[in-house]
Each structure stands twice: as structure tokens, then as C-alpha cells.
Image (cartoon, helix red, strand yellow):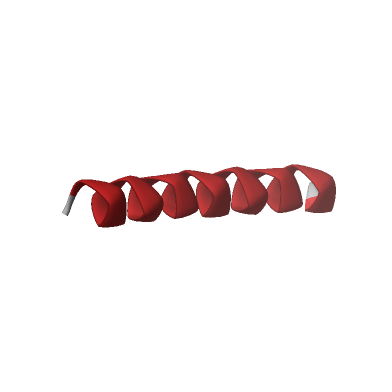
Amino acid sequence: MRFDFSMRTISLITTIITITDTTSNGAG
């Protein structure tokens, strides 16, 4: 089972979403 891979992927996606959301708020 690739639990570690899943957790790293979820963390990466969450980070990207957070950065995108912050950029949108800063630009808008």
C-alpha cells in the first residue's frame, strides 16, 4: 500500500491550492 505516496500527494495538492488561493486573494 502506498500510504506514504498518498499523503505526500495530498500534501502537495493542498500546498498548491493554498498558494493559488493566496495569489488569487492578493491579485483580486
